[in-house]
View 1 (cartoon, rainbow, N blue to C red):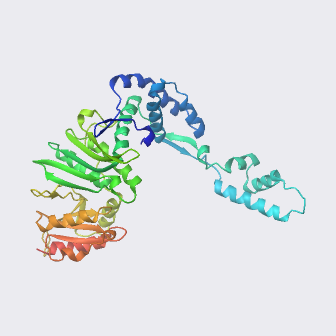
View 2 (cartoon, helix red, strand yellow):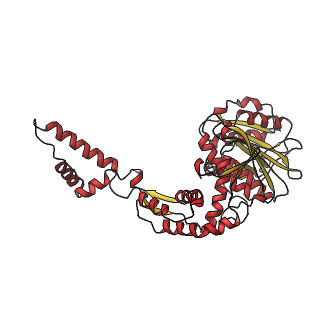
View 3 (cartoon, one colour):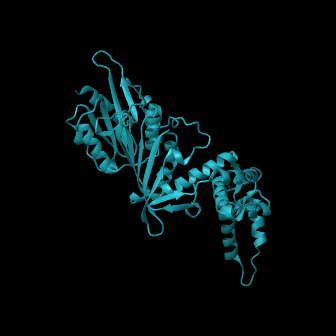
Length: 414
């Protein structure tokens, strides 16, 4: 992502408008982006300072310098810089400084401290040359990191990525985001909802496939904590929005030093694109804790199977329910077939849980297990009287045996 000083915008009344690259700017900057990418590829094995100096030396028009600094930042984000392999610098410092302290304590009055002798003795103990020990002492400092790899990107794609980063840099100042879309392929809609949950966004869905959907997301500046991490998650969600064919995104911002109210609007007409994407749905991913639950649940060897849910459950006029998982049990003697969906609420607001409970009370066309983190302070007793839904309050992670017990109980009711 771009840092705040690299995000170029202009104001149009209440609107904050990123200064996207027009066709002429892209044509002018393509050779610069090509040279920047070539410099990074040719700098493998070099120290960070050398890499940054080589990128700074790429010539450009003075007026384009802020854009080039942004391109340079995006390229460095794709670089892997790490200490040179070898002896752990912390161990090297501990051994050398410990030896130096012992030698100093044993010195006679006015006897000089011979640093080179201490370095040579410790280096011999570690099986290194004195010069090699000196080189390892501070190899873990940022300026001593070396470029050990990078994720290549085509120059034209880098320019597309720059425009996307401008929009992301504005979006992280939002307090609320509303996304309206309709007429999308079902797999694209499910991919968008999966992405919102995968990135841990506090959101709710209103509407249905026939009328279209509104996805409302709390912005990072509406939260009391974890603002930077949540802002990054919202920025990472934006490429999923761009995979829609028709949409309107409107974000309320706190903008500038005075945190004044402003708006940011994004539609397909802005021409943003995800580099390398073909416009398909988000990859079929689950949040890591749900992937872990699926793996451990399958290991129980129960009569239930679990897989990623593909259904959007929307009642007319109500908030839509987008389950994460679906559990199925085949019919057996004394046990009819069953299908139960699971929706996990982790880093969500307590209000979102109450809203889901209200939807459940009005009736759902399926059975639902609602998994809620303990930090949201919700009691499992709230759904004791329901034969269509159950609450599972978990501590650190969702436990497979506890989920299985809830499934069996819910399947036996109603």
